[in-house]
Image (cartoon, rainbow, N blue to C red):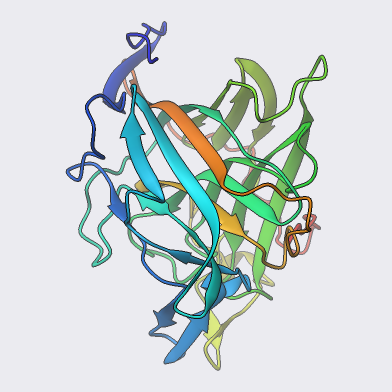
Length: 305
């Protein structure tokens, strides 16, 4: 279904996947496996990926497959290893941390049909290749698309930043209502243009929001992030969004954001991706925008989850 990558004025295509062939390209994508991860900082196992999610991620073709130039990530209602659902999470970084693809700055674009229903949590997003400023969210997160599972007429664009740990992180989210009765189950294009000191989100080429204020603090006490209280506590602007990020695509089930699926939630729930394309700015990037400098973390950012 994918068309040839279009030429965008001012941008040069540097990486893409049009999902040709019959298999996922393992030179571009790896899989998270399981229902959690080991947090080396706290020496503890974090079940449910830190969000009390209910799915077990696999690399099975039942949960992620390519056909007719489309990638399908499928969440299924089935038991596996103590979990009541299976799904997949693909990323351009291997599980051992080896990079497959990452980039600092640029335009990142996905075209997708997104499943919805109570308890579903599909997302197209980005994480830092290395935690240069500390654990999540001190090193940042960029969410191009996610939804509250039972609100299919709205797309969320978000950035996470601040200090490490749930208490120290900060979040800014914009809710974009899809026009004309459209839902996320229709084809839409989700993009972010990320430059030094500025992050711009787009849905179907409509500019939804520009972010130019964030902060990062690497200080910790007893293993938890400390919210900065003075300029000297902050990492240099525009940290944390000045490091390479990699790409992530997944369908989570349950968790503290969308809640538990209802009897009306349809399974299998399929995230279908037409293409993923990454561009660099022709001529490179200028110095960071100074707008975000001088703003302090205690100026409120609305937390979503």
